[in-house]
Image 1 (cartoon, rainbow, N blue to C red):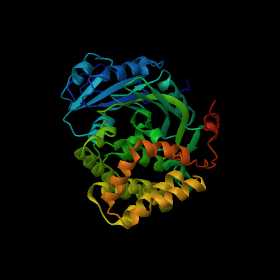
Image 2: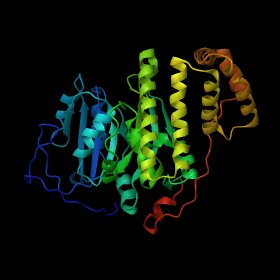
Image 3: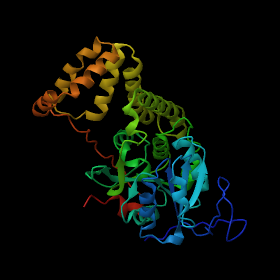
Image 4: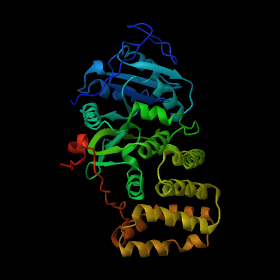
Amino acid sequence: MAQLCRSVFVLPDPQIGLSPCGQEPLRDLVDVQLSVLIDTHNHERFIETAINSVLEQDFPAPEREIIVVDDGSTDGTAEIVRRYAPQVRLVAKKNGGQASAFNAGIPECRGEMIVFLDGDDWWTPGKLRKVAQVFGEDPALGMIGHGFIESFDDGTRKTILPSETVRLQVNDVSAATFFRLSRCYFGTSRLALRANLARKILPVPAALVFEADEYLFTMAAALEPFVLLPDALTHYRVHARNLFLGAGASEAGERRKARVVAELAHALRVSLPGTGAPQAAVEQILEIVEAEAAQMRLKLDGGRPWETFQTERAIYRVQHHDASAKSKVFRTLSMVPALVLPPRWFYGGRQWLGAQKWYKRARARAVPVPGFAKVDIPKTEPPAAASSVTRQAKG
């Protein structure tokens, strides 16, 4: 493992202290390099797997701390976490959502780096060692993201990876273009930040009861360089109680999701210009976030047909700009109804059609849905200390 810079933290007593957000004693944390921050809410079925995946990492235990922020769980999550003391420190709080959990947990972290984990996910072996190595080889680096494994309740798994190691900062349009199609690699359980960068971004807007991770990693990418690794270091659990994925199960859930995504778009519109990123790069990132927010609003509350057409055109252009000519023609023809139908009629009809087996078969044979666009990686000159990391390609 590469040697990392170390900080000394002075506590009132060298052996024990009190957390300002909890009642539990703190261990002597004078030599912590990595803080593992787990946010959880009603994860009694999953939290042991998450914590055990951290404890089993091949990283020196004295050089890392584990903090679990329990966001007002009403099940047995907190009791399960307490069993792990003193290896794990519990910060208990009233339920307020993911942003409030980050706002409570990040100031509690004493490590040079903060590595995030959702209470329903888990890490693969070697994750902490890899993160520590990459941060240690590149002192200017502010953030790390990586590939992941989607893990379903029925045991099936799908690995999602970037094609190669990338080092960028969102300080021009080309970098912003790449970043906006790579957001999935920076979600909570894939995210690691320098602690001083995380604190610089705080507070995360409280309205982001989920999607707080996207606010964090988008701001971080504009403020400091980041590295994207072609390694699957996290299992992302896909299950019905996932707040983001499960929101579509009811209209109330859809409306909650729409409000949160709209708040995210607004918060980034306000905050991103203050990072110093060029306005053109800011607009490149905001285009897809604001289009996603508009799409949810139109589905639920309606609007004007031309709004539907513009929104769908923007999303398709961002996600599939390199689609085949055949796919683009099909898309154009399929959007004609959007010019005349009320948005809710259009989206309702599209949802119905997409659920028909005959349509799925015909579409797969005639015009398969294109994958996400491939974006050329902007060429940057990495610092000498980081060159061995940033020039790696996927093995």
